Length: 337
Image 1 (spheres, rainbow, N blue to C red):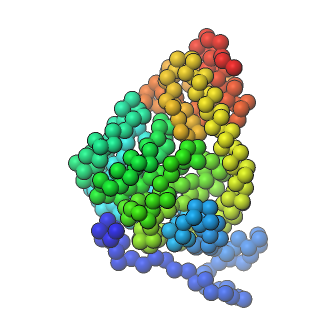
Image 2 (cartoon, rainbow, N blue to C red; image 1 turned 90 degrees about the horizontal axis):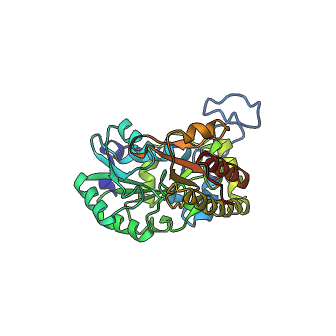
Image 3 (cartoon, rainbow, N blue to C red; image 1 turned 120 degrees about the vertical axis):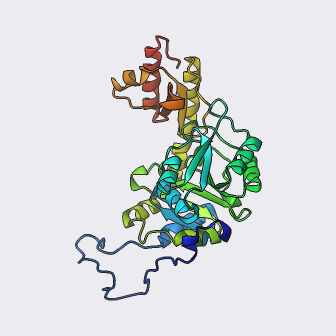
C-alpha cells in the first residue's frame, strides 16, 4: 500500500485531539456555552457514529472514515495518493466531480467511453487503465447519471488486473445489490465510498463514509482536517442508522416506482436506460425540460455527449404519476396507468 501514497504524505502525522476526561476544558480556545454544548468542537473521530456504522457494515471501526458527504472523501483520497500529472481514470459518462477534483489536484483525467452509455467492456477497460498508467480508478456503481451497474465479479477483475487504487463509489448501492464492501481486506487497493444522501434521504447533513483496509485508512487520516464532521451531522447520522426500518421501506417503494416509471417511459418511446439507482436516464427532446419547468417540475437536462438526455429522480408515487402524465401529454400520447 505504501507504494501508492504521495511522498509528501508519508512523513505526515494525523492531527491528534486530547480526548482525556475533564471537569474544566480550556485547551482548545472554544467560546462560552450558550446553546446546548455546541461551543465545543465535535468528536474528531466521530466515535459513536463510526461504532454504529461498524455494526451496520460489519467492518472494524479502524476500517472506516466519515466525512462531509462522498465529495470530501474523494478529495481526501486524491490528497493522499495523487501526485501532480498522475492519471485518474473512470468511465464516461459518470459523476462530473471526479474530473473536477482531479483537475483541482493537478492530476490528469481520462474517461473510458461506455457502449450505448451503459455497457463497459471490462477486459478493454483494464487495458485502458494500464495504457494510461492510472494511479487511481474511480467507478460510480451504480453509475451516475446512467444508472447502469458493473457486476461484482467484474469489479474483482479490475482489482486483480490493475496496479492502481480502485475506488468504488457506492452512493446508490442500496437500490441495487452486489456491494464490494466485503472485499476491502481481500484487495489492498480497494476503497469503497457510501453516502447518507440517497437511500437514507438526509442529503442536508452532508454525511458519507469510506471503507478500506486499515493501512489505507491510516494514511488517509493523515490528510483529514480536524473536526471535519460537525456534531449535528453526527447525531442525525445516528438517528438515520437507528431508523433502518423506515429507510428500507422507502428503498422498496423507490424500486417499485422505478420499475413503473421505466415502463412508462419505455412505452412512450423514450429509450430509458435500465437503472439500478433511484433515477432513470432517458432520451427527451430539447424542449421537454422547459415544458416540465412550466409546471414547476425540475428534472436534470444534460449537454455534451449526453445532449438530448434527461435524468429524472424517482420521487413519491404522486410525484412520479404527475411527471409521467406531463411527459405523456407533451408527446401527445395517452399516459399509461
